[in-house]
Length: 471
Ligand SMILES: [Mn+2]
Image 1: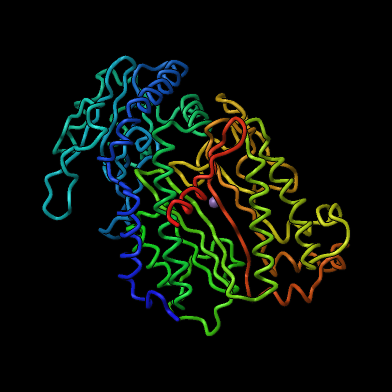
Image 2: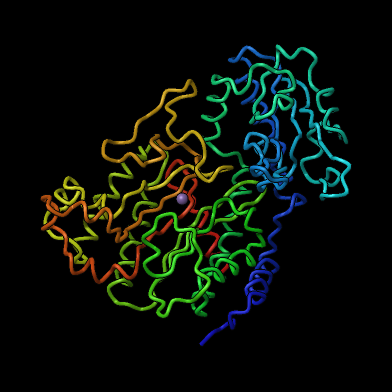
């Protein structure tokens, strides 16, 4: 019996009620964010002081980015701001603007506000971030350059430059020395302000997940579940940190399934949703899997849920993330044996590639301004990298965990015929229970993903805290 009747407005109202009840404020007037922002800017300045010194430069010019046009068209793709720019200020929709930073001075924000009656233009600067910048509003793009340091040889430019005019005559564009320092720092820890943005993003995403689960129960097709998610998070599709994965039934086995069926399938067996939200450019990345009642699949969802919590409970500063990934494979072997999907010794399931066929992706990644945030392979700020363990090329985070790192823990288990077929004719073939594989195929797969902040002696689970608060 539908509870919300499948009416999209009902999912928005459900979320709006929770936002009011929880007093959630996603805006740049949020006083809690405002109270933390000053310290954030100090830290960003410190990182740039260090990067500039090592790069032998005096000024950093951080360009927000330019709109990109579709081929032979006068329409642009949705704008994605330079993540370095977003790290300075919650300005995700301010193209053709710059932050100019000179150590010791207040950062200058050259704020491009075109006079344009065809498009909406950025409003006047307003919000908790404005007191920290020397803001120069320009109405003509050609006037941006006039606010940059005169000696361009002492500048580095951080940003994407597809047009000479966007380099402002600066020759040193994204120098590796500086970028490595900034990326390593961004991956190593989040500031208090960033953590607060990410807690809010987790709540925003959880609102979407609650609505989507209701929409699944209401029998809606993938496309309408996606719409329910967008209604509840109040995100336009282009504002999502990544394309929603809304997968019913066997679609759950396609790791990055982004097609959205407009029609309901005849039978609703399972629902895998990997969908996030963002607040001021900081992402949440959450996956949940629901069973519609089949005993074997429900049992497996329960086992993967406890496996995921087991891994989350091992997160703490000093742990090697590569070990967490390999531990996960050992636990997956146990799940395969206990659920009757495979037999034999756990070690054999690992060495013969059985666990990798069922879970072919990494246990997770860094999370922040980018959903797969930078710095996951960096051993140090000089650009040395750490390889993933052999046989596990898709692991995106290989570092030893540090306090205030934010990352995902997302084990999965899928029926992917392309990979399982590779086990045929190998020593792995007799270890797999192929009739159980056939039984589970129509359910696709399972993934459970939380976002956690590393602490000295454990972790803060941003995702579970968000769901608990919204219960
Ligand atoms: Mn993820």
